[in-house]
Image (cartoon, rainbow, N blue to C red):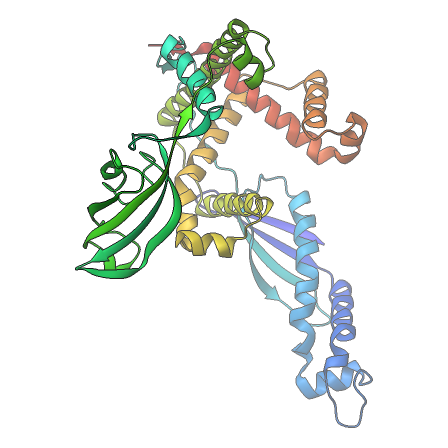
Length: 427
């Protein structure tokens, strides 16, 4: 195989890849062996017709397409490894010469990592984040736990806000009951917003066993076409009222909802957890703002194929996460009303940001001569092993030279992030 690289405008390149005539003939023979059982030739049993007879009847090009498909992936992979340019997109392939007895020649047009003009990256301004934790924030977290630990008890009184009620109801439009508007022994938490706006509020004050009429108007965007914007009346009867009995904020409560024996320890741990969360959020915000400032100060042109490749990678990653949740893309599109094209449009801003962030950080790595050490690499392997609950030696077995190179590059980029943030100025 031979490779010729021609650089084009806009960070594009054309790879001309030539494969020997011998390799092409082997691929044609393989295509013949693969397809001969599918081809009927008068006078021959299926699979017994010689290649020359088939080519004479159907044309010598009959096996060319399969032969090309056999050669191209492997030949391109070899060219990719041999090419000294940094390819950042899938190839657009065109066949130049395909004829038995001659070298097979095809081109692969690809995007190269673009050269950028790096702007100011030391001393960029970022907003100072407030990481203080207020008493209200602490009590809000504790009260949520308290709500989760509450138990429901039946009470004999009129309905109040936040109660859970069991009710029967039937809905009418212009005095006529409508389909889907009836329910029996239906559980509803008042104030949850589960029903049509205005419905739940009108049940406050209702007494057990007494029918009340609730008047509402269906929203214009209601899912049932025949009910959109219609005024309706619901005849409702409360059958049971339950209220939440909240636990006392004491040591017993703390022991039940946490690993701590006293409420004081639990509250202190809650404060620390909130502080850690705010510090992490502030760190991430500072990183984002610093990198965004550098991007804004830099000149970056992203080749269209590079962006397309990134978008498709992001959608593939999203599809994989969906599968882990038990869904597939077809189901997702049905639920959301999106299409594959619309999803690609949606991820484009994130893809642009991701590419530009990586480009400026890689250029900072070069400018500052930042490197990841073997010690950094070993720490990362230990982190991976811990995350996937594997032995470090097993992880090492999975890491080849290319994977190691990528990990070291990623670690250097993360060091560049730390460098930028440490040199940023809070405003």
